[in-house]
Image (cartoon, rainbow over all chains, first blue to last red; front, side, top):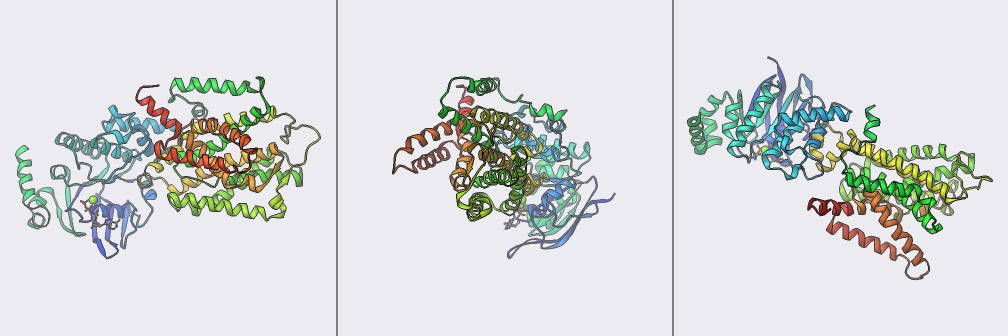
Amino acid sequence: MSAILQVQGVTKDFGGLRANDNISFSVEKGELLGLIGPNGAGKSTLFNCIAGVHPVTAGRIFFEGKEITNLKPHQVARLGLARTFQIFVASGDLSVLENIMVGSFLRTRSRKIARQKAEEILVFMELQEHVDQWVSELPVAAQKRVAMATALATQPRMLLLDEVAAGLNPTEIDQMMGLIRQIHDDRGITVVLIEHVMELVMNLSQRVIVLESGKIIAEGKPEAIKQNPEVIKAYLGERYVAKIAEAEGKA
Amino acid sequence: MEVIRNIFDLSDIPRKDLTVFGIFSLFLLIFPLIPHSSFAMATMIEFLMFSLYGMGWNTIGGYGGQVDLGKAQYAGIGAFTTAVMLIHWNIPFWISAPVGMIFAIIWSFAIGYPLFRMRGHYFAIATIATSLVLLDVFQSWNFVGAAKGLELPLKSMPSLLYLQFRSDTYYYYILLFLFFFGFFYINWFRKSRLGFQLRAIKDNEEVARSLGINVHWCKIKTYAIATSFVAVVGSFHACYNFNIDPEDIMSLDLSILIAMMAMVGGAGSLWGPIIGAAVLIPLKSYLGSWLGGKEGLAGLDLVIYALIIMIIAAFEPRGIWGIVEKARKRGKI
Ligand SMILES: Nc1ncnc2c1ncn2[C@@H]1O[C@H](COP(=O)(O)OP(=O)(O)OP(=O)(O)O)[C@@H](O)[C@H]1O
Ligand SMILES: [Mg+2]
């Protein structure tokens, strides 16, 4: 396997605050990688550095062997690296289908083709019942699926998902888990997910990276991460141990 | 051809709206045949001009959400290009109007490139400033008549080529042609790739960027489209009035009035600028003729426009069309 994304020594300062501290890792083509860590660990900041939202303070980033350090967000998207935002605000006057069409218009000028692609993804993301609704009218779970659908419509080869399961109920988490698995397995898209919902991230990920205070403190298979005393101490604490026991009980 | 089909594709619009628009179009077509006063004709011509101004403004201001209060500078560029080319080189409207449009577009790029780095209110204020600067330039530039402006030479015969007619009816039908041309162009635009991207930008710029949209460039392109509409109407204005004066065609009043068409009628909707012009222009004509005779009341019309803007901003930012759509959602229409 070859690396689709390489992050080399990325550091990001906000004034005096070091949000990412010399972070290095790579993502293999076709991998499903989990990125976890406590609030404020710097996970979203790392996505923003990769996607070009923030210029990095130091370090380099490569996507499919091409350097993307400090490219603009739209340039990164055009190269085939899509992302969703932790906070998704859609105020406006686009319907669900129109939102997804905005994504598919990245690869075509034709309204007809953009619409066909968007309809296909709409069905794939189980949004048929919402097709003509405004995004702001939808329940959280559906809004998250719209954001993912819109990103998918740009036909990415890699997708960064920032907390798409936050605020969902157990049924919706199951649905989301199934969808992420399909995006990865059936569409062959490399996925990195930031997630606080342990059940989801531990079930889906082939490998997990743990971030704390801007640094990588652990990396490995989900089973190993669950056992890693450093991780348990730094981030997860008693609550997590209980959750895992519960999750294992379910399985 | 997909494009041709898209231009005339009104399939997402309710039947009722199309019926109303159809009847209204029919009225526009036969209006000159109905007995009318010259005051009514002049008002109708102004209505068509301001619909077109408004349609242009609505692209960047309505669909794109970038409030532009400097459109008069482009009307001025169009009008003066047409006047100067006629006076100095005897060049007909149908050539000078596209040339004026090209000048206006070039100027819009020079303005738009730095201005679209600004956001919200800063952008709006900067558009006012640039328009006033250009007004100053024109007022002291002798080649374009400076503060006196220019008088267009009268042809000895009426001429379609030079857009000089003895009867307003001819001007009316030329404008009506431009009106439908503009309408169907906007109908295509709103669902084109650029239209979709622009609406996404209005929604959330950061998300738009993440979808591969070059936000800055999209705004500049759309600003140029808005500019083209305004410049052509400016050129028309020169031929229709025979007399142009920078204080008039490049004034802040005109810029605000252009913005008001879509804001009052419904920003970001296909009908908005037409509804706005249909409501505001008769009001403006009436106020103008009424206030004309009353010393000391000059400027009252501006006060009234300001009031209308405040009412819209406070109660229904989507204007008259927003009220209609809300009522429709509640099932009343
Ligand atoms: N644009 C910004 N300007 C200044 N500080 C920022 C900015 N974005 C993030 N930070 C800070 O950087 C640190 C890392 O934030 P980040 O959002 O990356 O954390 P996170 O791991 O995604 O947390 P969470 O799980 O709560 O989403 C925080 O201390 C945050 O306050
Ligand atoms: Mg975050």
